[in-house]
Image (cartoon, rainbow, N blue to C red):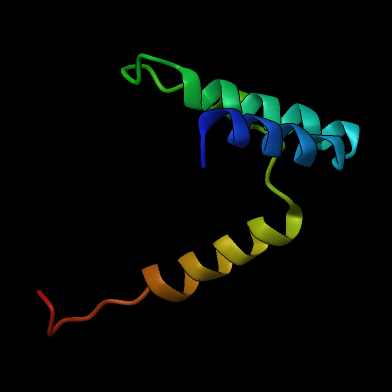
Length: 73
């Protein structure tokens, strides 16, 4: 797929998004386009994680990180 075709596909997908998701997509694209990764500013991502996703992440951390496997160390 050519770059032009990818741009066109992205534009078509953006047209299907509600306004708040378009803003999130712009923020994500801006994050991807940053040339320097030395300073990671994640403040632009604040509020982009859904409650459902946050709960799933918290559960995964609780399930996987609060156990000690003495055989592994």
